[in-house]
Amino acid sequence: MAEKKNVKGTAVNGVKKAGGVAKEFKDFISRGNVVDMAVGVIIGGAFTAIVNSLVADIFTPLIGTMLAGVNFNELGVTIPWGNQPYINFGSFIQSVITFLLTALCLFAIIKFINAFKRKEEAKPAEPPKPTKDQELLTEIRDLLKAQMEE
Figure 1 (tube, rainbow, N blue to C red):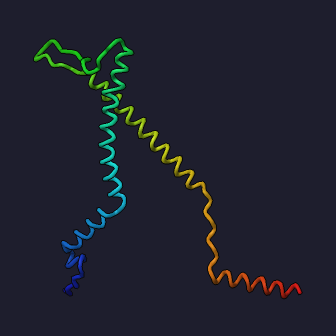
Figure 2 (figure 1 turned 120 degrees about the vertical axis):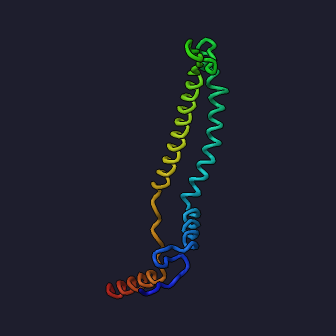
């Protein structure tokens, strides 16, 4: 059986060298998509905190006021048997409102980005400038055309 040469990051007898895995991982991490996704997750977490505060501190009290002073956090039912568990459906309603507002905000952001991309794509691309060779050939063609017409 012939022995294979070991080049950094390649397989030797079917086993991948550790440096190759590290290089693959480095390439994977340094790709734009992974970094963009990480930034998106971090910004999404901060955005979620903003939307949660918007719902809990502004919208839920306003909706509660419109519904004759209902406080959603206090909406719930105690079940009268067993250890009498408390089902807090007001908190669930608040979470649904948070989800809907988050989805609405994301929809608006994506719609804005798509509209911006369409405007960008709608711009006609400028034709490439002729190279030096093409300019010289055009001059030669024009000179030959002028000589033929004389």
